[in-house]
Amino acid sequence: MKTLYEVMDGSSRDKEKLRKAGEILKAGGLVAFPTETVYGLGGDALNPESSRKIYAAKGRPSDNPLIVHICRLSDLEKIAWDPDGKGLKVARAFWPGPLTMILKKKETVPLETTGGLPTVAVRFPSHPVARGLIDAAGGFIAAPSANTSGKPSPTSARYVAEDMDGRIDMILDGGDVGIGLESTIVDLTEEEPVILRPGYVTQEMLTEVLGSVSVDRTILDAASTQRPKAPGMKYRHYAPKGELAVVEGEPGRVTLRINELCQKAAAEGKKTGVIAADETAPLYLADSVKSVGSRADEEAIAHSLYRILREFDDEGVEVMYSEAFPSKGMGQAIMNRLLKAAGHHVIEA
Ligand code: TXA
Ligand code: MG
Image: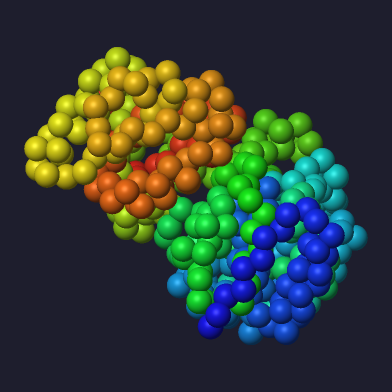
């Protein structure tokens, strides 16, 4: 399959490109597009055949449900039940934006899209290209992140092309994304709302709107570097090709330990990489040292994490060590993704 590649440059021709992309989606094709979080791989959410194609293109198991993207608040009730109004409350506070809610699905949404579940994940993104595309496609786009299953989510169209060229009909290039980590997912189907995936919209922000909100147990464990889980392929997501471990402890010791570990790997002939904050990056001796930004700037860290993991892949780095980062607020999302990328391999400095 030849993949069409269109750059969205803010010119008057963008409208025509969106119209063409919308036609592809309506005909059951697949189009990758930018959102404010990461790039999505879109298909018509109400067409079971499109969802099947998404799973095939990503190499993703078909019991892992997709998020349905909408571009009008009034479309929420066409696909989901919101018996107690929690959905509307959350929508009014955070949409359009990086927040996905889980609600009971209506008949309109095929089980192929929800991975066989009676619930549906819904998100109203804020990115203008995403909104324009959803509208052009008829209002409902099912879209996972546009990476091959298991790899870091793409934060620019270049990485989408790396994974998806020849497998989908079209890529809309809207430049680098803003946030860089996937949306927060909150499950509203239980008595107490539960965060299933931390993101830019934090537990504190959701609690303000909903009263009490808990965080899924497995995430709490994953975000706490105090209680590292055994590494296992089952948990390896967002992963680079090389081996990654997170080193935690008192800052001075972390630097020493990482340098020691790099030296050892280098002696074994392996190419080494380090992920560090601006403040400590100059202290490392490795083949490739990458800074995620200032330790105090969570948004910068979120923005650069996936790009850095992909850059290490491109450079053929075989062994990587990362500093741990503060896991409060949006830091919870950062550590959640970093630990998943590392297969929960944590080293005490
Ligand atoms: O920021 C984002 O959310 C991006 C952009 C493209 O919108 N999308 C994204 O999709 O990250 P994906 O498919 O990579 O991640 C969706 C997550 C999966 O972990 C899936 O298991 C979960 O949402 N999910 C979807 N529907 C669900 C449901 N009904 N119940 C529980 N989890 C669900
Ligand atoms: Mg994904």
